[in-house]
Image (cartoon, rainbow, N blue to C red; front, side):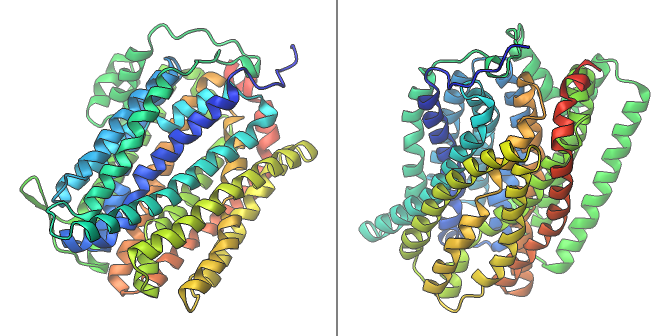
Length: 526
């Protein structure tokens, strides 16, 4: 086998900048809801649980569902074009939020943002891995993580300042400050899409020494993937693919168990924190029933995907199922997302409510701090994880991720019990730096477990699990506990219980990563 390339492909640095900016814009348009939440709650008359549902659950289902067909499309079509079209779509959906006057229309906007942003990670990760050699990918993922931080911090700064400026300049306008902020956030995406459309598409698989021929039918395969996972339509696809009676029975049993579990969770949530019904499309809906119905649909999609891949792409199914490391990485990412999204969704509200800062003060102080540390942190942790991986194959990256995910929950109790705003911000500085260390090494471990042509599918599968069970549950649970207890601090700190299974899984990942990666081609061949 010839040696793998060690140099960055031509245009690789430019591509990394553009893809990183795409990632930043994705997080900006997604996260801006957090800083605007107090104003939205006041105007629309909803509670913390409903904002958690809007921030996480409504967005999560469609983001996760559409990440599957666009992930499959990213594995076979021109990824630069796919990203350009996607950012146009989600920017338009973000702009729709600026015209929203009801919870239903705002939810529709979030739905559209979820659909549009679904291509960002599958197509972006697949694209950038074909520009950069294997030994530099910890750095690549560090840049992507820094871009996420730029988007998160930028959303607070842009959203808070734009809303404050508009309300101060036009206090009698029918357009509220939070609506204006959404319109401002939508604008840059239209420009960025032009750069993506004209960017060079690299040779797929060249950096890994694995020839990857063009996909003759990327669009039909993508549509087939959507049908295979969409509840109801998946029965048609299963029949066309000649699924066995045993597989169909397993699918029915799984759906039945999911429905039963969601009914029980709806009853439990309603008992813990009764909420007034939401009016959507003229119908009154229990918000807890809406929450768990969406999560249930997402779980059915996961079941359908796993079964569908085993029928349509046995090689990918063998590779994914044959790597316990990959499965554990997905579980760790999901659990960490429960913590991260649960905290992020309510950080601005916590600061405003606890320390009585204005939206403008919170945007400037917390937004700049979050962006600065979030950019610097991954750029330090990513190269460190690459260096440690060379010295300690398999355990180097795992140790960095385990340190970040094990220490940060302990530090959160020190941060969120700060007596005043200045102390909170100073304590948040080292906490945030430590927290940024998990993503670059974990992602690098995960994507090295599959063949290049499977990275879009793997990214989509990970996003589905992480989004439905992480983003879809974390913010909602924090909002639910906050409404039930009247104590947002308690609700936010409680979510850190997810760190216990994370620590156990990371130890196992460190022990298995090299062994499972070595078995990659054997698993692919069956």
